[in-house]
Image (cartoon, rainbow, N blue to C red; front, side, top):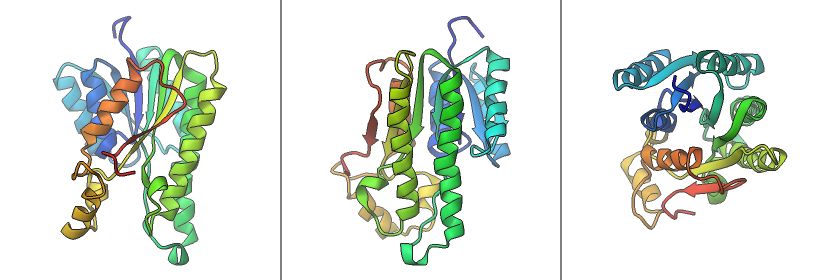
Length: 244
């Protein structure tokens, strides 16, 4: 690592939007610590591709809701690269169900990963990110859309937005920006699973751009917030083509 190289942790970085963010930050010159929960093969593949392209990355397994595992994740980043400049919290799960039919055990699963996980990751980030750094939570447009079947997920992302805005104000004077990026419907395997062509077309039509988002759309905004955007702080940026 060179003295000028910045270091990023990306949770949920083995696939989907998180994977694209990992690739983008690596291309931007960051040393990347890719966190994954269970997708070890995909995580190792991502690291291998970054190294083959001349970048620097390591993969670290951790359950984002486990405070001890997350502390170890941050310890690994500091031991390997000497410090942490950017934390992108992209890990999350979604369970679809009408409120009347939702198994409360599933509600607890969603909120453990998406709410507790955000709090645990942001807590470590608040303690360890260096001045001039950035904390970026990957939220969602769903709290604005009020889509049937999304109550558990939307509520968890609304909680993430609140954590983000409060943390930005708690870090006053630290020269660390804290923002959330809220994608709309995006062409990831997680989004496409279980949806027929008509449903996908309807969701694409929600945006005046008449298309679904691509993971690169979100990664572009994360790259901006992680680097040049030092005067954007305490915001939720909607990356949805105008869908909401």
